[in-house]
Length: 134
Ligand code: ATP
Image 1 (cartoon, rainbow, N blue to C red):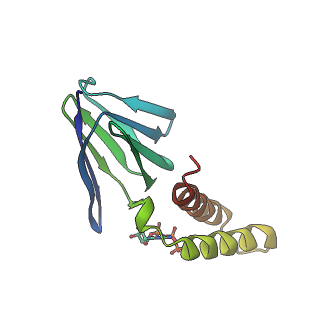
Image 2: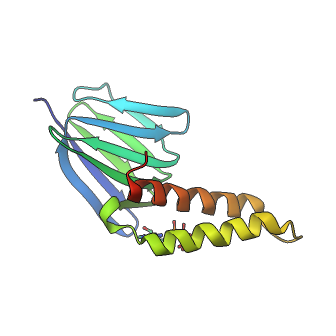
């Protein structure tokens, strides 16, 4: 089975380093599937799940923005934040989603709606990755 090395790095440190057979990431323009031998590319990432397929399993990582850099034998994700499903604090993500929803529903002056929307999107992404619902 052909594989590609995947490194996921954030400002807090490395999150993932392993060989996989396929990467599926959410880029700014949609989902992108990457197989070993892919042509060199750089793609901006949105808030979404990165799926890392191995022979008999798939690992999920909640990624928040950044870039995916692809070379034929190696892919690097430089993300603002990234958590493996097992490292997600589900209570924190649920609290964060609730807080953001409250701000979005309040319709009060002074609420930064774009910021609240992005916070809700990050929290929902973490909840979906934790639940394997991607
Ligand atoms: P919160 O509202 O809970 O602070 P946030 O979306 O504002 O969430 P970020 O700014 O995206 O948080 O992340 C800050 C740091 O906290 C990052 O290192 C990120 O990996 C980590 N983090 C955020 N939420 C969670 C979570 N639910 N589980 C594990 N780590 C988390």
